[in-house]
Image (cartoon, rainbow, N blue to C red):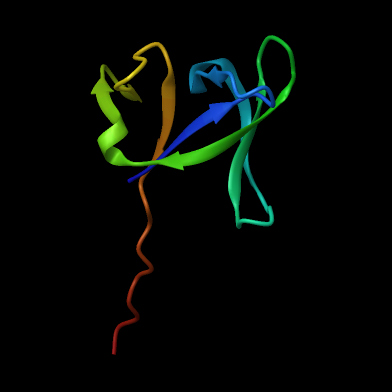
Length: 84
């Protein structure tokens, strides 16, 4: 799985539960997730984090260091193999 944590331009972490309209966006470092803060409509950027930094809580994942911050978790899709 891929885990993404989001932060405002100031560096302040934002819970994925407080975001809407998550999409991939091209950047100099490759594709990244971005979203809009539900309360302020500020664009926030995501960065991938290690599975070691998250823990399962209820129906989602959050940061071990700050359980109030929910992270985005996406399962990687493997391309299907064509039958030969």
